[in-house]
Image 1 (spheres, rainbow, N blue to C red):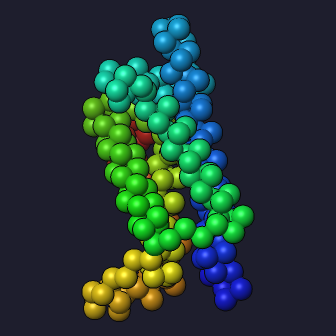
Image 2 (cartoon, rainbow, N blue to C red):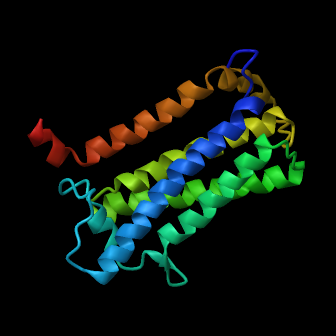
Length: 200
């Protein structure tokens, strides 16, 4: 980022944009979940082929916590993140303990999102575009939250090796994030090549 565009200035917008993406995806998943519950023959609009099929993912048994489907928690989580971003734009300055908790919670969100992705890949054998949108949103928020927290010394890491490589990480923050997404896409294409390979 240029000297005039710092992470401290951009971070609230990153949180807001990613929260909106996650919120819209969660609402879409909630709508499809409720529609399938009322009509088992309902076909979500994102049922594009045997691999890209929201219906197969939504219809999986056990996809709930305390009886509530995952998308409900997504709505609550991303609505909270949206509030955080707006609060920052309004001048709110939470303390370091708040940001450490934020990092932990966003990290748990990433773990949960990728656990569901792996379940979709290896157990359900189908992908949901809305779920993939959530993966992008949670990953992006966690990555930039980590950088924001370290930059502002809300979390001080004294490891010598980390101190040496952190300037490189900061210079290539977007490259690293995009590289991660490319790796995920390559993994998914490789796994589902049995379908996509014959349709090229």
